[in-house]
Image (tube, rainbow, N blue to C red):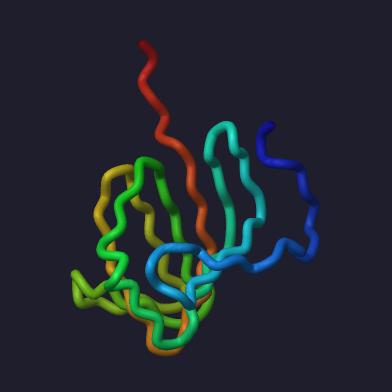
Amino acid sequence: MPKPEYEFHAPSAPWLPAGGKVTGIWQQVLASDPATNSYTGLTRYEPGTDTSPNGPAVHDYWEEVFILEGDLTDLHLGQTFRQGMYACRPPGMVHGPWRTETGVLMLEIRYAPVLPAP
């Protein structure tokens, strides 16, 4: 089933731990399609969260992230990103690990790569 049709509403899905070795990372699913692994959700890091124990991240899907509030520092790049900044990551792009001083709230969109026609 594709992502469901929703008109504007207050999301009611619970905030769930993101998993992995690091605590303090939470996700709220806004919409998803298990058949295609498409996902739209919110990701929240508590203040002081450091994902170094998880190491860098790499995915087999496209990922778009928009920072709604707070700060996020890429420890590999040594750069801090803030509210209003956006990332678009193709499959295979290595990113992180991350640290946040004040906490961060991000909108995250994931979708599978479009494969060329045979």
